[in-house]
Length: 84
Image (cartoon, rainbow, N blue to C red):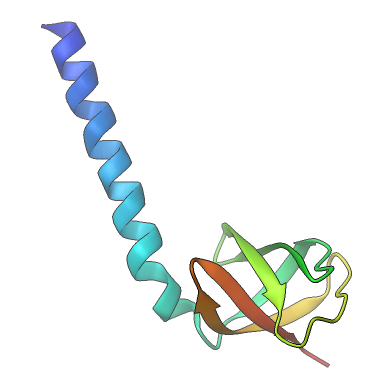
């Protein structure tokens, strides 16, 4: 019985993460994020406490800790522009 409960819990957790990733991207457009791993042109950003793969919209290098704005998404990859 314990194994069945653990399996159900794992499935529910996996489905909730999938829904979060699928619905959250549109709400993030226009939000300010911080570059975690340099965008050269791809790296990672933190926006609303979540880590996302990201790419500079013009292909430029953006260093860690820089502020960027989310301008779109392509296949769960955030497209960002540098905030100056």
